[in-house]
Every structure is written in C-alpha cells, then in structure tokens.
Image (cartoon, helix red, strand yellow):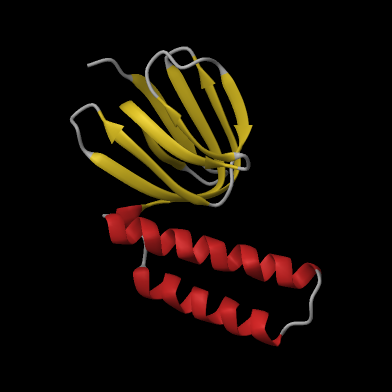
Length: 134
C-alpha cells in the first residue's frame, strides 16, 4: 500500500515520526485529509483531533492545537503548538482542565480573557475526544 512519512512535532518534542497511509487534521479552514500523492499544501492548524493510519493498519489519534501543516511530495510535517497522542492523555487531568475553564468562563466578563478560556475549553475537549477513541 502506498504511504508517506509523517512528522508530528511540538516545540518540546517529536510526538510521532513514521510512515502512514492517510491523515485527517483540523485546519483553520476546516478538516483536511491527506492520501499518498497529495498536492503540496501549507495550512494553519486549529485545535482538534488529528487522526492517521500507520502502514500496519493501526489507527492513531492525537489532540493538537495551533501551528502549521506542510504537505509535500512523500512527506507531511505537522508543527503543532501542542500535541498529545491518545494513549498519552491523562483523562482525569483533561476533565479537570475542562471544568476549570468552563467555570472561569462563566464568571469572566466578555473580552480577550474569555477567548483564551474558550480555547482552553476546546483544547480540553479535543484531548478527551482523542482519549475516547484510543
């Protein structure tokens, strides 16, 4: 089966590096998918669930937020602000973060801080969705 190389990296570490047969990721323009032979692409990432299928057929998920994705011949590089593979996510910690952010948003006046809290909620929700698919 045709494949390409995927590198999923954050400023702190390489989260995943290996060959995959497909990828779906959240961009600021909506979800996008990549199959072998995809045209070159550069896009900004949104907070959400990144899914990919390894050459052995194993599906993997990761929670990502922010950054960029670059698709080029035979390779995809995801440069994310944050990324966690589903099996690395501490579900209880993600639930607590979600509860804290929702409570803070309910008590916060509208403004810049409320947008940061909405982003915190989205990150926690994507972590919980990734962990649920593991």
